Image 1 (cartoon, one colour):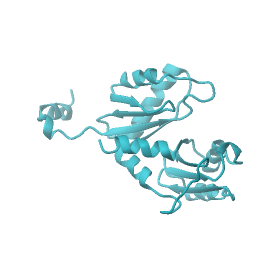
Image 2 (cartoon, rainbow, N blue to C red):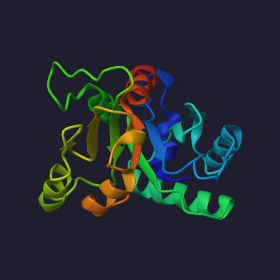
Image 3 (tube, rainbow, N blue to C red):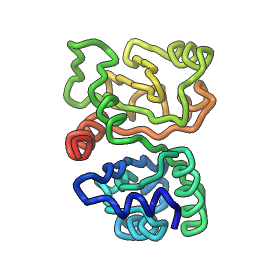
Image 4 (cartoon, rainbow, N blue to C red):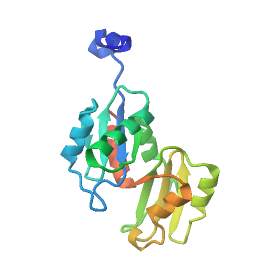
Amino acid sequence: MRSDELTQNLLPDDTRPPVPRYIAFLRAVNVGGRTVKMDRLRELLAAMGLDDVETFIASGNVIFNSASKAPRALEQRIEGQLRQALGYEVATFIRSAPELAAVAAYRPFGASEVVPVGHALSVGFLKSAPSEDARQKLLGLRTATDDFDAHGREVYWACRTRISESAISGALLERALGAAMTMRNVTTVRKLAAKYAAR
């Protein structure tokens, strides 16, 4: 046992620092014919030593506790575990609970942001913030129906029609950004933040 772990174990429960809570967004889970049951996903991450593993809807959102202060290393560990268990790459994008709260609170298109029923506002999670060149390429994809914003390690896409009817696709966005990304509807992001960010 490391000395820091020993010290932490000797502290009274009410004086121990809280264990960080993370949310992992997994790319391409339960799409394209690749099906992973959520109980199997929880088992795989719990086997890595992650604590209190939960999933939120069946689209690859995993919530867990970890004493690790290195989210990038956690991403790599999860990717390795899933590659070995599932036989294919599952890009993983981790945010801490406070980071997710900030993502949910951000209003990319102004305080009066309104997305009509049947339309979509999506959040794309990246490994790192896009370069200025990549950001300009993203903004160059704007159309009468599609608008974009990049803030931190997230990309925001307002589609004022059904996404299936848009000329823009996730693959096109990734090419413009030069990086892998996974997208979630903003409603999912805000529900996750409301449920977990305050813990």
